[in-house]
Image 1 (cartoon, rainbow, N blue to C red):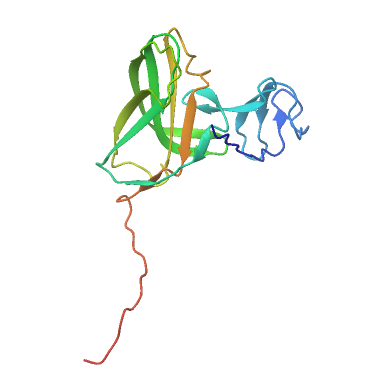
Image 2 (cartoon, rainbow, N blue to C red; image 1 turned 135 degrees about the vertical axis):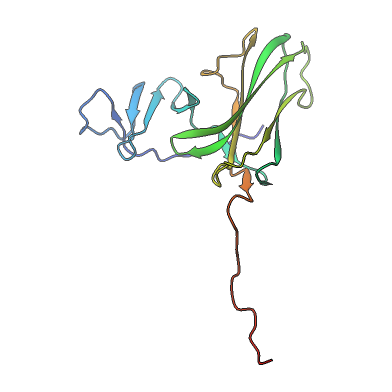
Length: 200
């Protein structure tokens, strides 16, 4: 399995409850911090060694986004199907939530502009599969209000019985940056020039 690493320069942070003039270069204690440049609130978990940021009303870890392996062009009225897959070994699980999102990923958060959810079950699997043996998908219809910067996507799974984690605490989250090219929203004119001039 390939290990992906995302390096972020988070700059200087300060504790919310401390003197606003006091700067901390590297947070060492768990707690809420503020980026003094943007005012964005983030939570640092010193045990996990991760920053968490607000998305969809819950805090999720930074670093789950990856460069997209391809780009898909979509325009208003098009349908976009996002499919997740994974290898699974374990007991049967009923009522797992699949959570699908299109939006804008920023340095300190994901603006979830389009959301979709599914519910699916996983059968019992007793031996390690050679390839992904569980899939689920959701199909979005692209609205006329789509922004040209809605080009990032992410998915996560949570819940179920027995539970695989809560919506705010699940470790099963994965995303792609710059996965979409939004077309047909604004006029696009390129290579504008005088192509010829001659006496006739």
